[in-house]
Length: 141
Image (cartoon, rainbow, N blue to C red; front, side, top):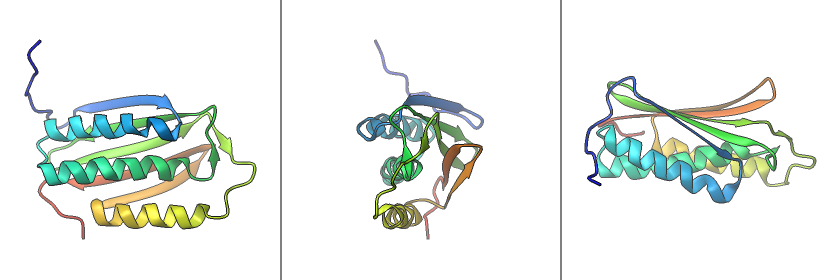
């Protein structure tokens, strides 16, 4: 079967849902690599996005008991950037958050600062959602 090299255009949306397990975050990284390559990002931006999405997923899992939850990754291609959101669904707050939880979250945020143009995290209605944006041809400051 021949591989398609068609680029993803503005408005293309890809969604991936998988069990909220740290060992499955590799799935999010692989999908992000494929989508960003098809969206016209160069190899350096592709690597930044792959690493950033891994941190985004870890940040989303921080402070939650995700044993029975799912991570939903949504990627949206626009004219000049890729938006990615990661939502933790069907999970509860951890019984006893680890003592290093906030420090780990800060480290993930520092890594995201270096790799993407914008990012954030929010809790609402029992869901945790983290998001990022990376401009094509732009560099995070």
